[in-house]
Amino acid sequence: LGHDLYMERFGGVPVPPRGLVFPEVVRDINTYFGDVDYLKDVPVEIAIDPGWDNPYSVLFIQEDKSTDPPKINVFDEIYVRFMSTRRVQELVQATPFFGSIKAGAIDHSARGHKDADKTVIAQWGFPQKEEGWNWPGVPLSSRFIHIQAGIDRFRSLLPRLRVSTRCAGLYDEFFRYKFGLSDDKRWDVKPND
Image (cartoon, rainbow, N blue to C red; front, side):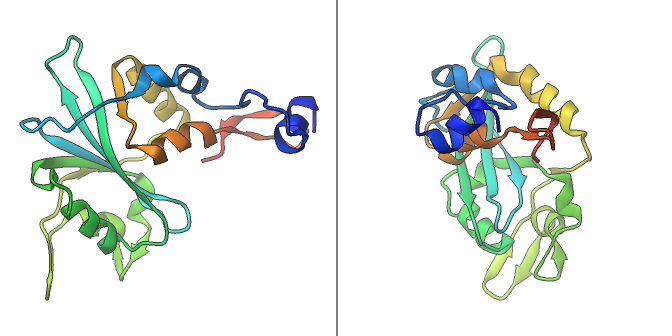
């Protein structure tokens, strides 16, 4: 296993995380995480990563143009497991900023995921009307992005990023998103995604 990996898994000795995709965020966690609040008159965008046994995540994001350069504020999240798309949408509708959501982005894989006989992207993007249920739909962007291109793009936004301490799921993701171990127990070049 190698000394560091052995100590991390079995040794009971604190070892700095190894193989992290974004070690700079973990190293300077207080630079990125802090007090970030919803700005009432600023449009909200959502970022959706559907899941079931893996977390179903919805991030609430605003661009604060009162700063130079504008900051990207992740001010809240929904981070749950074992919930249907409709149930997550109900949680989104219950937020005080639901009426401010103007657009969003959803993981490309949502095009293939089915939930209640509809693709997940269709459930989020198009109005859904049933007895006792009304989802207005949110304009969504969804396109395939290579993993490394997404990592590079996210890294380019780090100087503008601020994340609320309420976003415990996102906080946890920075510690869990790691490069995989290859068969010879070396850090692989591709993260576990």
